[in-house]
Length: 313
Ligand code: BDR
Ligand code: CA
Image (cartoon, rainbow, N blue to C red; front, side, top):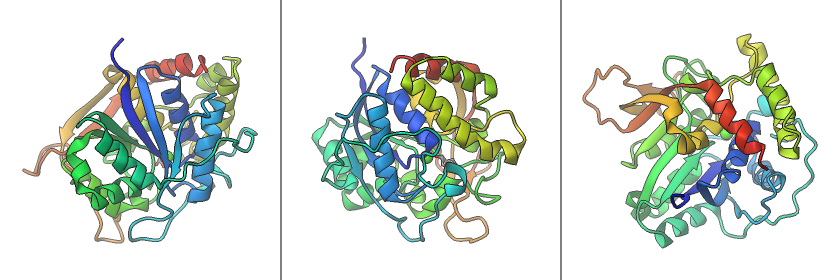
């Protein structure tokens, strides 16, 4: 087997973040160097605790979890308890974590990891607002050319926004950080709403998680049962979109996705369209093609992958 791919997961769990973490920890092709928490779906106190709960659920209390930014670069924090519940992980009854939170700040961990590994050895997987990544790049610009790739969930184009008509949550919460990351020169692969809205947690798929029979399978079904209720009501679909695990699935099975290398810029000036990802899908500008924008997936293959891997935990 090839050497496992080294990643850092930057995250704001969140039920869908939790499933992404489970997928990564269940996959031998991936070496999770650490998990860095950021404020987003719920405040930092909860996201760092939730990340540890999920590591323990995966049977991996050895994974290093770090707390990072408690608020966006310039704007006040906006959270999403109306989607994720008060704890951010409403649904299953997960015990308080016993594993420690590491002492180091998440931003320092990102910087030190990149400096102490080979150039282009580490992939950054971002599942929440991009505050930690932008802070690391600002504090230590020397890390930028050392990053292999940034794979992130965020933004939207044809699908519009989910927190305002124009903006998706992760980008809206910290548009200044997102703008910095998109313009950094690091290869970015982006999973916008255009693709994640095609990955629906239908009844049948949730029953398959429940039927796995292990704790992680049952917890996944309970997490997603809670999580989908908001989007099902909003979109009138069978199930809600499962956003963040696509970032990890991409590392494992890129062939299930389709996209295009295009220019994407982030709106940071207009209040009306704040955090909008302006995606030049049709190539109508000469702006640099800075992002691989994923637009389609084989949803059955994606859920098959999740089931197979979470079933091993
Ligand atoms: C994104 O926002 C959060 O609510 C989810 O965890 C996902 O990362 C979807 O817009
Ligand atoms: Ca998230």
